[in-house]
Length: 133
Length: 133
DNA sequence: GTTGACCCGGTACCGGGGTACAGGGTTCAT
DNA sequence: ATGAACCCTGTACCCCGGTACCGGGTCAAC
Image (tube, rainbow over all chains, first blue to last red):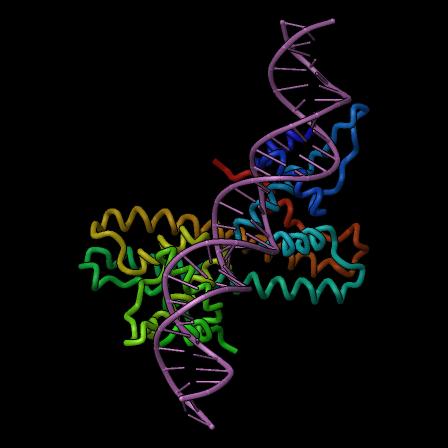
């Protein structure tokens, strides 16, 4: 699969793929006799994963770590556990905060028939507090 | 509360506050007789909210919308419902994807005692598929 | 009063994540 | 064979979200 096809299937810009190659997020694929890159089919899911993880708030460096975990992670199972535990903890916090945001918006919807000053949307309170130690 | 105190309490850089003021994410507070800004106590939660929402993947423009909803949203309850429904739908998708990521990493942990090639970490598959119509 | 830390507005600069472009080579349908 | 679309490498540029810096004013402890 050539660059443009991968870009099209993964809904990214072709230049983005070259950028990800430079960043090491994509492995350099084989080339055609004419020097064109020939990506394997699984590259589509990989690029989609990168973009979606970005939308969820992860930096490309964080995504690089996730990609390494997806490939099985370090040889040492203990290292994998430690790394994954760290990521899982982060994920749970993100999920909790998004759920709080959702609950807060639902509360607004339930009270939106009131005058604006009397509506209840507690999202600032929910996400604006310092984290507990 | 002066600029540096708010910055310190909210764990941001003072220049960031000036940027948020320029962007309209913070309301211009009252000034001291010497021309210093005097922020109200609730500004701390507001700035914390902005930063946390960013970490969760929202752009400042999206955060601006959320801040408006937090203030009660449009006068029209129908507008509020429509706007909030859109945001809630987005939140639910983010939550679902983060939960999928978590499940995938747990699967890796459960199989990490295997040789690397036989471990199971399906996160690419989970987040790398096109969205269903 | 002095001094260092703070404040201000405005301009310049930076990093992350792209994206555009130039010049030249390749591919494929006509 | 031709021409348009594609590809490549490498360099320049852009947007978002800051952050640094300058020159000058303010504040508070000494």
